[in-house]
Amino acid sequence: MIAGVKGWEDMENYGLSKYDWLEQFLALPEAIPSAHTFRRVFEPINPKVFEGCFRRWVESRVEAPGAQVIPIDGKTLKSSYDREQGKSALHLVSPWSSEHRIVLGQVKQDDKSME
Image: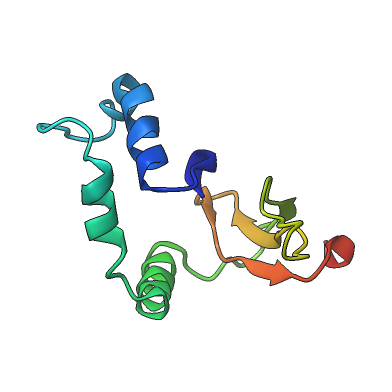
């Protein structure tokens, strides 16, 4: 979902098109990984285990917010609807830590009414 990609090939193409920018943050001694490499790395990841690891990582970076303002933002993901199957677009609500510059979580909503 990052940068609007929809598959492994899109991930590779994004990396190739943004190579100079990515190189500022990443060591890329073998260039951009292939679509097959992205698939082999990401497919075995258990989403629930990843979520637990990610939550622990966020908690290690973000202490109790105290008086910090936590903006809440709602987004509808572009092209996430499926007319043929009658599925509406995906709506997400996310709290954002301005101080730490990180999304603290995301909750899927059935419609935009909860934003």
